[in-house]
Length: 234
Image 1 (cartoon, rainbow, N blue to C red):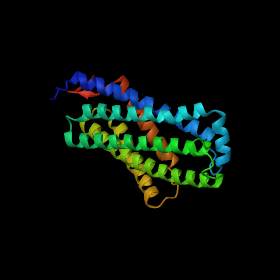
Image 2: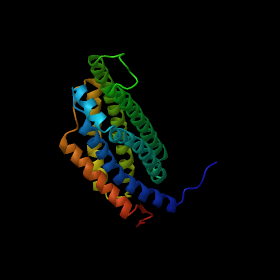
Image 3: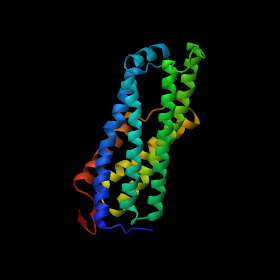
Image 4: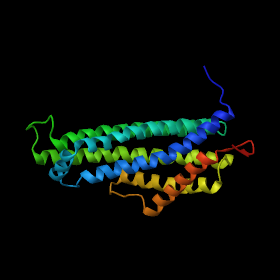
């Protein structure tokens, strides 16, 4: 059974998508800030002491990833609904990529909680020495990195496709879509390089700034102005 999607529904989805685009950015920042406050690279003992000092806050930071999953899925639904009339197959493909991205974030979250147990030693007893736990943390961090970069690549491809459709339909100012379409493939390429030849290659600061400006601009435009349907901003 299918339900007709009216222009009013698409307008609501566009504004909701704009709000969620803006809302997900501080959530990402909160996750990174909380993690960096506790984790000391290469020093499991120091990380464990910091985490045990305020484990509730650390667990809350990890749990924020579940909010990222929910927002990612809702964003996929919103943009698919808005852009399906422009090109159903392309919008559906981008929608599917974002769902897989959400699954990758779920995997990252599960790995993070496994690593938490290794940091604290809870439920492990004397099964692993500190050196063994440090080796396992390094192993799981590597697996986390794989899931992260897969999700990053899928996210950038979906972002490119959605913005291509926004550009084609002239739903938002084209310069905003162009910024996303330029930065997304380059960041995706760096993600692929990290999968093929892991070198801890992080997106260049310039690309990250371009993407941030593009996402802020797109989110604000969609939230405040909406999309241009049938020649009018609504």
